[in-house]
Image (tube, rainbow, N blue to C red; front, top):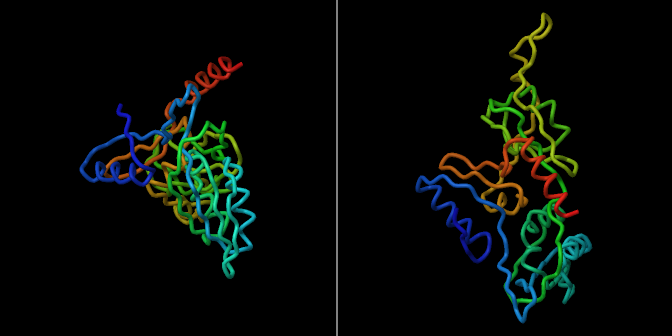
Length: 253
C-alpha cells in the first residue's frame, strides 16, 4: 500500500484517473488531512470558505457549515444573493460540496483556500445515511432492485455484476443493511418471467471519482479499475465486519 499526498481531492482524483486510464487497478481509502504537532499540541489545516447562494438558502448553508465546525466571518447581501465567508477545518470540507448542492437545489457557488494550521477542533460528523450491501456475488435483477427501491437510492442498474460486501445503494436511514439484489422472480402459472424486465427501477446514481472519495467513510473504500469504479467495505465478509466492530467498541469502552 502507498500513502499518497496531494493538495485536495481534485489533485488526488487526477492522479487516480490517470492511473486508471493507463490500465492500473487500485483500491482507494478515505482521504485524510495532514495533522501536525505544534508546541506539543495537535493542529490541523483550516481554510477560508466562500459561498454565494440565493438568500432563501442562506440559513441551510450556515447550518451545514456550522455542523462541520465552521465559523461565520462575513455575511453580506449582494442583490438577490447572499455572500457568506467561513473559517472551517479542512476535514469539514470533505463531502460538504455534494451535501451543499443537494441542500440548495444546486444554487450554491463554493470556493475555498488554505489559510493556516490551528488547534484540532474535535470530531466532525460524517455521512448521515448508511449503505445497502450486496449479500451475494451474482447479477442484480430488476425484480429485486425494484422491491428494494423504498430502502435506498441505487448505485447499480439491474443486470450488473455485484459481489459480497459491495456497496450497491445509499440507505434512506442511518446504519448499514445487507440485502439480496440478485433474487430472480419466481415463475408461476399466472406470471411470466418476461415481466421481470418491465420493472420500474429508477436509474442508478452516477458518481464521479471525486464524489466517491467524498462519499466514503473510514470503513469503506473505492475499487478503481480501467472499466469501472465501485464502492465497497474494507472487510467484505459480514461476520468479520461484526467481529471487528465489536472488538473496536470493547476497546473504546
